[in-house]
Image 1 (tube, helix red, strand yellow):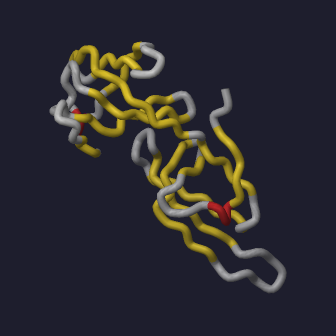
Image 2 (image 1 turned 135 degrees about the vertical axis):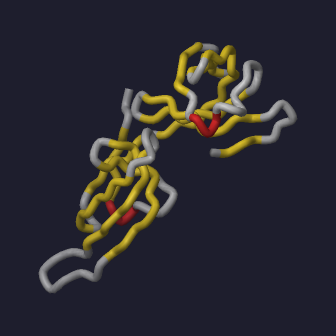
Length: 139
């Protein structure tokens, strides 16, 4: 299974994803310097890790390659909740798996509700809880 692909630094935009320091990150800012007398323009990209919300940066020439994670958005139903972990069932493949629920989501996670999660580099990252009326709570 392929977890990442390659793109050029010039293709990165705010809101897209990039791998920085072996962390899949959402790009928060992109700064591009002017090309010098003998070199290409440099790009400074700052991102927030999808795993632990830590800040990472990447500085390379604008024509250099960078790694981009493959991000899949999926939906699952909450089967059960026990403490700070929840058992989810994927709505496409019907596989069940257990994830740790972040503190800010804990009050909304209940058995029977649906959730959206991202599958990034083998990790399942919870995104939002859907209410029974179809509303969604984003985090």
